[in-house]
Every structure is written in structure tokens, then in C-alpha cells.
Length: 252
Length: 258
Image (cartoon, rainbow over the protein chains, first blue to last red):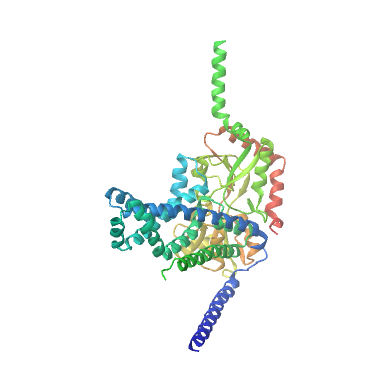
């Protein structure tokens, strides 16, 4: 009986919260439309196919960058926990460099700087920059996850004769993966959002498409709000996916 | 006979230096034109995603004469000259004002369009208008919105050195500052008025241009043959009235934006 009451109360609080949120947003919208003549007829519906192209481009570079960033992150994360000082130093230098330079600058250096030596197109430039930048953060997350595993387990594994490779693959990494999942999900979400910076090298992703349509249609805010909704779709999906994995691999 | 061979060799090597670019374009079959995402009415996208506008049509006419297809390479405005120097495209046809500073890095064709910078203001804030002299009197209090890297920015800095210059990445963002009255004026190309006044009827411009500017096509220094050909092309299109027709079509009543 108490349980049902509590459930009801939760729902009431939830509804109140949403009403307040909707009120705040709509008053913001009304206040803004005093200055800005919103015209939803022009954008987004007439330009929908362009937004969808941009959406898929963002999805593509985000997913590929997530994959590469994860690979880079695992390699360097493992290197950081290695007993060889030289590997540690390499990994630490990498992290220090890429965590201390803004992503925007990395993108510009890779596209214009490296791009002047070897021909790289905007998409590869964006994926390389994003993977290297986010990989530096992920390697720190992975390192934390590995170090959080109880030392006794490694000793036990050594006693039964497992070599270093199997200790990592069978014991350390699966546990690190589980404990770092929430942090990784957060990192992937920020990767998706950071991919908007690739618009500076004129990659036809969501932000770029949004800017292009804003200028062509003379409807800038309609365009940027549409872009925001598309980004939200991707990141919300990632969040749900992250939650699903967390539940799936939870220690019961 | 020997002299003839030497002479031929010299001509050939000159041709390969000065006659290379057009040949290269025709061999490639595609004319690569550098532009930034959109700058209506010069260029922009329609609802199908095709590029349209004054300069887009001009580029298509060039490609027709060359017997090639045209492809627009999109680069951000602040990186457009470096991209040209890095051979990402053949030339910049993107409403670029001819300036002596830019001409140190690239060659410009003869002008194909004449325009100038003008002051945009919000007639709700300044019902009687605001002039260059008013802004000079305001000195440090004057807030001027401009777009990064444009001649509007250069003009604002030159004419009003003491004023606060607010720089924005896009002109839309800069224009929004005068709508919301965060900035007093916007300094930008005169022909932006056609599109902005359609959206915000409150926005007006001063009568006099702050300066006069010519728009030209920017080409990499060594591509002399392309430069000469483009000059001839512009000259002919000016004479036969094509440029004037294009101006009537794109710059006057903005019917295409519906």
C-alpha cells in the first residue's frame, strides 16, 4: 500500500517538473519571438532531406570515431598500467599532448598542417582528430578502470599460470569495462557533440548543413534549433544504450 | 634546325609553366570552385540541396565554355585563401573583395561586381537613422557588429578605431545583435540589405556607402593562363549584358528565395 502511494507521489512530482519546464521553455520562446519572426514553414521541412544527409554524416563520423577512440584508448590505457617505464612514458606524453590542446586547434592542425603534406579529405581529418582527442580521455578512463581491479586477482591469476596477455584480456579489461561504462558513455556523448567542430573544415555534417541552410533560407534560429534536435536524438540514443549495457553487465 | 628545336623546347617549357592550369582542368573534366557554405544571393543551397545563386550561375557558364563539369568545394571563409594555396580548388569565386593585402597572396581578375560597405541599423532604436558622423561622436560607446574576416570588419576597424567591434563567425549572428539591440550598427556589404530587410522590416541602412569595393576572382599566383582567360571571360560577359541580367535575376527582388 505504501509502495503505491510513493509511486503516485513520484508521478505527481514528475508531472509538476515537466509543466514547469514547458512553461520556462515556452516563455523563452515567446520572449524571443518578439524580436525574431519565427517561420517554421521555410525550415526545417522544405530542407529536410539536407538535414537528414547531415544527420547521417554526423552519425557516421561519430560512430567511426567512437570505434577508433576506444581502440586507441584501450591500447594507451593498457600501456599506462604496464610495468615497462618506456611504454608508460609514451602513453603519458600522448595523453598530455592531446588533453591540453583544444579540439578545434587539433582539427585545424591535422587538416591544414598534415593535410598539406599528404592529401586527406575533411572526413578523414575529422575522424582522425576526434579519435586522437577523445582517445586521450578514454585512455585515462580505462587506466582508472584497470587500476581499480583488486590486486589480489592479478596475483591469483599469476599463481594459476596465466600470462600477461590473458590477465588483461580475461580478467582486467572485462572488469574495467564494467566499472568504466558510465564514464565511457559520457565520453561518447561528448564526442558526438564535439564532432560539430568539424564544420570548420567544411565537412558536410549537421552543424555545417545547419549553417548553410540558415544563410540560404534567412531562417537562422529555426535551422539551429532543428540541428539541436538532431544532435539530441543521437546522444539520447547513446545514453539509453549505455544504460542498457550498465544493467546488463551489472554485478547482481 | 638545332635552333628550331631549342626554340620549340623553350616554347614548350613556357607553355608548361603558363599554359598548364586550363589544360589541367580540361583533362580533369571538372572545374573546382572554392566557396564558403552560403552567402545569398551570391551562392547558397535550395531545398533540394543544389547550389544556386549569382556566382553559381557564373561558374556554370565558365564550365560550359571550358567543356567541363563544375564542382563547388566548400571551405570556411577564414580558411579560404590557405585552401586555395593548398590547391584544394582552382579559384575562389565567392564575393571576394579585391584588396591590395589579399593581392599579395593571390592574383585577382578584373572586377565582375561593384558593391560597398554600408551601415545597417535598427529603425526601432534609431528612428531618425544613424550616420557615420554619429558613430564617430559616440567613440568608445559605439558597438559595431561585423563578420570575422570580411571587409566589413576591416572597414569598421579603419573608420572607427576607438569603437567596440563585436566579431561574429556568421553575418546572421552579427545581424541578430542589432535586432536584439546589443549592438548599435552592423557594417556589411550593401547587398545584404535585400535579404535581411525581408526578414526584419525594422532594419534600415544609411544612404551613403562607407567605401566602394570591387569583387574579383582570386587565383593562385602561378596560374597566369587561367587569370588571363577569366579576365577575357568577365570582359565579354560584361559587354554582352549577361552580368547585368544575372544581377537583375538574383539581387533585385529576391523572388528566388520563396
